[in-house]
Length: 174
Figure 1 (cartoon, rainbow, N blue to C red):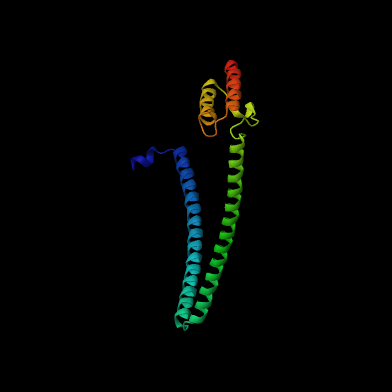
Figure 2: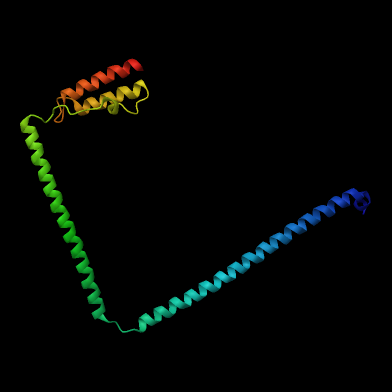
């Protein structure tokens, strides 16, 4: 009782305001709950209808006599499709083999004629493109030397000279 005597009108107004806010929050929560409940009920009905539909379809399939002639025709169709895929793959493989043999002959011809390993036109700007500091320049230089070194099968003295010139030019720039 002593507590009620110590409460001022301002305190009562604050409590009423708080109670009103809480009541509004509860009303909103209840409306959201009711909406979710309705959505759940609708989903439950859809699920039950789907379940019944699948059960009926399963019962109809069990009740049907099995027609193996359809199954055999279907299997035959699948085998024919697989055979067509294999035939197309074999034809493509034959074309690839012929192209490979042609490239192999050109390679042998170039190798025997001495044009293999000769400098092709190499753009030095492309060799070191994307290099933006000295460490990256050194790494790219080493990688290019591994590829174009004259001791390698695909080695090229002319390419090494171009690489060395470009490296020296870029080294001075960094």
